[in-house]
Length: 318
Ligand code: COA
Image: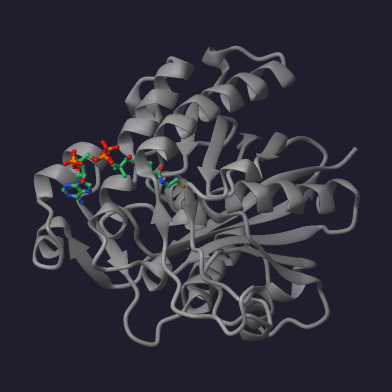
């Protein structure tokens, strides 16, 4: 029996920072409203010409360094993204070329904010079946490119960034279990309505019914916690760290309460990064690994919820 083990992590944030005070000059909002309703203080944004692949490459190289793995040893490259550089080739193919690798499968996966947990599940299946020994899994986003900067209900919430992990085949977990779900009945609550369906793509921006998304997110994430623990015969006290998708501090706090975890055991980056969609979990994970909070042997629960709706969890013995 083979399992996937985390060999290394990496992340990258673009240099440009936009604070809540900066947003006050752009839309009718206040720093206090943003902080109190979301927990966000600032976010990083790409500059002119900076792309999803640029962010992914730096995060990927850092993860490969941390893992002690050469790019040439990879036999799978997977990028979760909603904001790819091009319609095609996939950003994963662009990254493969930058890393100087040829031949291994490389593809993008689009599950919006749940993209990283979806991608971890897929990579884990490659490794468990022996189809891959070393997999690079990246979440990378330039969400700022699909924001309507005149819409205060969305533009204050998001940021750009990338995170990556290198997974390797091992005799023990590693990834203990993963649980994925989707329900397209909610397609209109959180969406970018533009696309190629009606001909040439027009400018396309995020639209969200925030209040309704919030309510469904809290109950759904509560259920995914129960499902993950029950599937493994675990109790809440078995989880050492919660590494949640970072959309809103109030959603994160609700999931932490569900787990009976103090906030000191929850990795929070939403204050400094905003919602970076599929990049938020690997960014938070890398930060807590590098600052020494998360240690080998600990039990980690990742969970995410996003447009679709899509949602899921990954339970990891680190
Ligand atoms: N600054 C100031 N006021 C704002 C504002 C802003 N940036 N955005 C909205 N408001 C106003 C609204 O217009 C509304 O005013 P009204 O009462 O006069 O109509 C008021 O604040 C309350 O809006 P509401 O949408 O009910 O606020 P909320 O407490 O639900 O917070 C969100 C809004 C978006 C922060 C919250 O709903 C949320 O986080 N939703 C989920 C987001 C999410 O998780 N999305 C991604 C999933 S991956």
